[in-house]
Length: 153
Figure 1 (cartoon, rainbow, N blue to C red):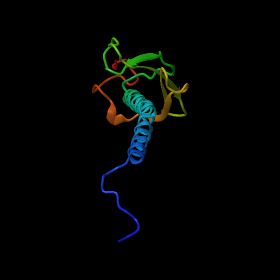
Figure 2: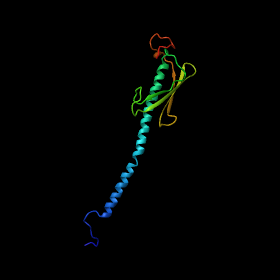
Figure 3: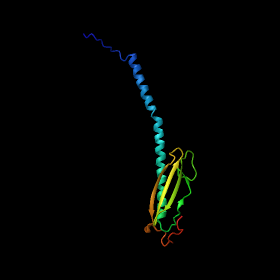
Figure 4: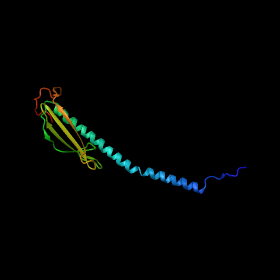
């Protein structure tokens, strides 16, 4: 027979305490990741919404400039507030974004559209993008309009 005796009675008190300690440490480690995860989720949500608003604003101005029937207003356009819900009035808990656009005339029939979107709690500069747009005869609407007129709203 072996000089070592085997204990077949199960886990001892030391093993149980060690297992509980490891479980508590694991749970606390997971809980410490929750707050940074929520912050990252909120940041990506705001950034995604802001980039959608930015893209929509650039495309809207691009379409107006490409239409040779529309007069192009250069300079700083009025600052607008866009609600994340898309409604005119903010709903409870609605995120609000501030949109500012500057249109600069370049040489020839070209303009630079620079749009910036900012939001509360976001980076101070927000996100911005610029686009160079030229007139396109194929985009003239309505047919027979006065070039550079006021047919656009």
